[in-house]
Image (cartoon, rainbow, N blue to C red; front, side, top):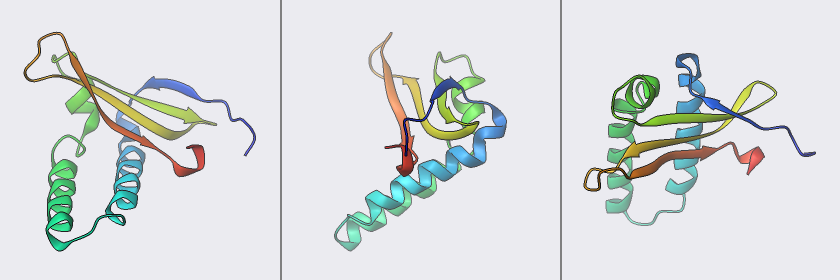
Length: 108
């Protein structure tokens, strides 16, 4: 693929389906590398919980709140091809943690 133009912008509510798709695809790749039933059960519970909590509505969770968190998407030709979020660290005031980094495998 030639060098695509990538733009970064804030997450919009209409991006939710694509953001969840990228998140799920990225974790499916990681799941395929896991060994052992315990690890897979833990992983599957984590995915189920995450898709039911912050990733159920990432805009409401990360952008439309007062916690000084945020969620960005990378786009190419208008399509969301990457994501990243920042959320305040629970134990360190003024520090943010990076979450939900996902990139379409065609753009890695």
